[in-house]
Length: 519
Image 1: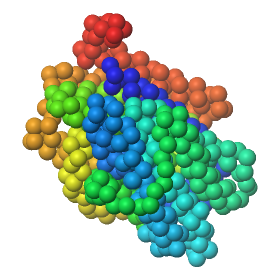
Image 2: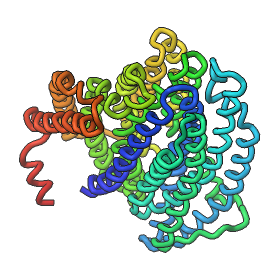
Image 3: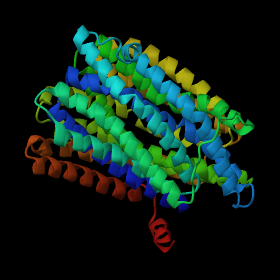
Image 4: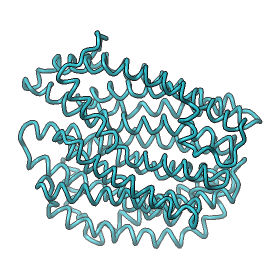
């Protein structure tokens, strides 16, 4: 129940952020479209976005939270001052490193942009220079969001999950404001204003986390950098965790670079918009579960309660399957009307919507894998094992590269998303096998009973939504009210069928609902 309550808090705010992200993307599609200007901004935004996923949602949390929890719990909950001392030491070392890294990235913006874009296959010198300019504008976001991740890790360890989960809302609100107030007839100028808004949003998120930490009684002071044993341990854990937690993001960078260099203009945008829709359930379920599971399992293992930690991970997997399976089926079957309703207006054409829906279907095949990675890796990180996930992430990245090269020519813009999905599935299989082999995870009877029944319920829901597509399709390109009404009708009907099917197939029973209401 505590897990569900915490997931509801984090997931609800993440859902709000993702919905605002869809509003942002819809406005971006209207004012910028799918062409060079959008590709240039999305390439420039890819690296900051990747760092947000690596640090705020991955590496830093994976390394920092278990160590911080041990400091706080060493004295039966009275060790918060020790935890703050450790956090100050970490900040004093990380800040100079982040500043130096940002300066290097600004200087090396040309080769970095070239690597991320593959050189923009059909871009001329002026267009590529514009992409480099946007990258330089967004690079300071890397420093800001890394500091946000440190403060967010402290608050998550103190079970104030909602504060860090609310921070991305500021990013989306800032970008939406920039689109509404500073859009221009020239898409290039609109794209430049979006790049400026990215960095501005980083500053706003940092101020929000500083305020929240002070409200929680946490005030960090900068000290002279010193590599204490704890900081050395932290640094030794961060880099493996970055690669392990960032396998999906790194795979997306590889996919984006290959698409930019080998496919026609607009392909990067198709993949981006498809990924944004794919990120909606990933953000709601995967990131929420990962955020809650890591400090929860760390605290349980810190008390020596292996059985409870395993039970928590079983319930995490159960929640992941409950939400992920219907989301996967819905995005594969209803991708076309969903994309049309959200993006097909202004400069975003029906052809753009069709190609985006194809990329979305390919991405969505791997949606369960993307989320299960978030559920399984806390089982390693809570035990301070960041090296095993990085080994498997490396294998996944190699598989992604090979599959990209094999699929990108025959499948075009569907090739990179499908390669990413298959590579992530390999990562999950390796993580699962090793946890089981070590005795750190055993699927309990409740998870085993419910898993296949949830899959059947999702397939039944998919069949109903397949037939609902045709009558609702004309409304997905109508007025704003008609588009959102059609979307609401499609989602609501699918959700009702799925919930009913979970009871029909016995995944849940009436007694479960009664018990939930009582508790």
